[in-house]
Image (cartoon, rainbow, N blue to C red):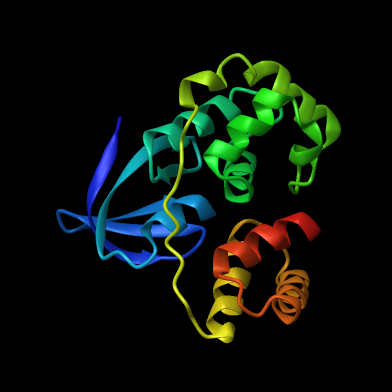
Length: 196
């Protein structure tokens, strides 16, 4: 089991990171939260969770142990797989997710793509007593100013990697950037996740 990888960040998008360590490039699936923490850095240490299946060997990466712990908790809930857990962590900061679960705010969870009322309530019932152990998590914003076209391109690319259709994501991203031209890639993605 790989606990973490420390090395050079070869590639970074809002949904994926390539971390080079010992001459090997590891492909890691990441959340927008993790992207924000590493954006602008040339090297770092990322915590890892391995998923080994018959048809795939996947690595999920997290900026903190707390984010990884939340991911693992989410995947224990029936109906919440790794992709949905990553979507939740892309839509809510870990500290916000803890607050949403602790307060029983299922409405906030249902605004996330793929989360219906029953799944949201199940997450709260299953995790309400467990989330206390990760209270107080926070992420440093890694926002950088970029040209609007680069922001749009990065947001569309990330949303396509998360499983959304390209033409729908382009329309959503364009709409968001028209009304909020100063948004960062992370803000665009989070807003797009609410409307897609």
